[in-house]
Length: 301
Length: 273
Image (cartoon, rainbow over all chains, first blue to last red; front, side, top):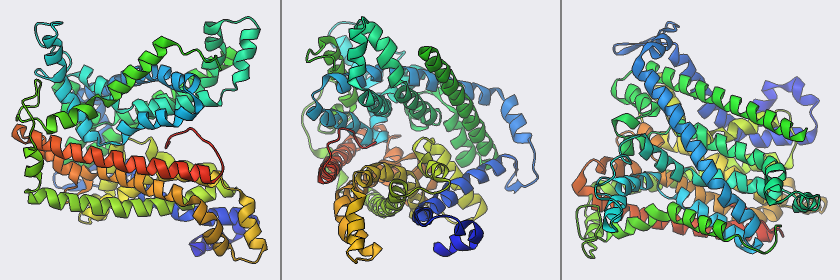
């Protein structure tokens, strides 16, 4: 590994100190792995999106044809918009439901019990995603657990049908699947808050609510932002949940990407849709981060 | 601290939330032992028939073997790569550190389908290699490495650097100082990292779905079964075993992670992430 580095930058290396060299050398296996298996393949996807599928072979002339088709095709537009909407709703629901739990564990659980709570919250996340999603189908179905239970206790006469094979089902299932992702970063940022700040705020005449709004919440914002991004970005590309519980009206862009790659054998179009989805996700995330900066600056004034 | 008073509403909410989190996992064994082919309430009586049926399916056994092989190799590779990056990141300052570590941690937030698709493009369309267990291993190593780094970071961060320096001053080589002083102290972290990446790889579906060739992994095999309603009780039984195994591995991993933190003389409340 050392050689790779030496050949690459003999001049650059000479004026690096010994620690920098050791650090670079040590990180290089992992870095090279990430470059070869992540950076290069992602670049290949970008390149592919400018090529076109010509029946059985790929036409390697650079063209924007895929992008034009992707934007013009109403089905793609619907799926893309739906993916972003569902993800945004999932993110809002997940983070809003998760915040009180993170707050509870950080502020009201005995310090020696916190690790146990966090462990309990993370366990479901590590168990088979596929099996968990499928069980939501069982819970939400026409003759599912929820409907039969509600009918059993006489709350409803007819099974609820708006909770399976549509976007609602996708939202419920994803909000469940990504819960720990939202709780952990918020918990970490709440833990970092110096408790004496809250006392100071109370001493200065703020009540519990205003202390929360003016001290705790702004200080917890980095965790909330991390939670939003860590839920929003992966859910846009979710495949299993829309496929199992979404029905025809709950399908998302990942399902179309899979269809293009594995069924229609149109890898360039699949690549184009993947790139557009990632670009949209990045733009939305950047806008969100920007808005949050403005919110925090407003707080400081 | 807002005092010892616990707000009752918040406590009830937190417990209700835990029930919501665990609902699917609690229902799973109920249907796995239920003597009806229809997955619905009311339960029809107790049976172990679905578990017995699992023993007779040859395709399932092959899938389990493939999955175990992939999970073991990915866990080892990801932990080795994770150790390099975690030690470099916690011990040294070097140019481009943020960017390099950012790229390495990227799979943590990247949708898995993007990882799957990008490797599919390279392997099938450009290199024209056949898909096999090894293509899945390559991808699983990539997505497990950030989790390993997150766990190992806390192991390496808690270390007192002067211990290793003392060993070097006393005449040990750098490698020996690492092997004899640092390695034993981070061993619990390494075990936790191996177990977590093993669990991730064993449960991962979407990448395996894109990248397995003719040898399906266990989740891909289960995916195939979901289309057949009469197979669902068997899937429930299989899922129960899988979830029980995951929880067992996690408890062992958590035990080692905490032991590692304690060994470094710290108390810490964070989870795996």
